[in-house]
Length: 184
Image 1: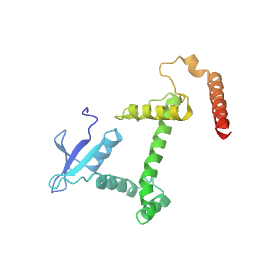
Image 2: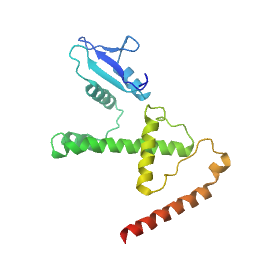
Image 3: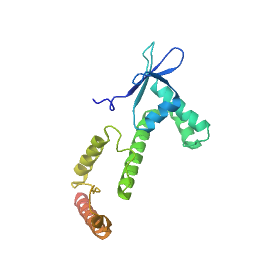
Image 4: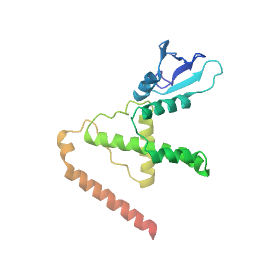
């Protein structure tokens, strides 16, 4: 495992100060948030007990952003999260949230790719492997590959949306034919 693929280990001392073990200096919650935005995984552990405190500190970072007016979570979502802790749906909530964020990241990645912009999450460790798994899954489910943008394609090919539309129409017709056969 490469150095970037390993989580950045942050140790919390008894004084509640947070110590970056890679750079041998103290860090703040803002520093940890910046590491995460830069695509780095972090793990925060209590020096004395060895307890993993990562979840607690990530929630604290979110709470601080929300309290400063950087509202990303609507009230109804927060309310549903609170309800989720007291209902039988508790076991479904984490899976649903994880799948929703995965879909959002994938959608953002596809949109950036289609616009020809650099993908901000492309540099995240393991992203290539995840995308390859998604491609294999889609290929297995549809019997055909999912259309992807090719890097290094000529501008003429990129601008020729007519051919792309014809290809998509043909793929849709093929899928409809497969579905019709399944229904028979």
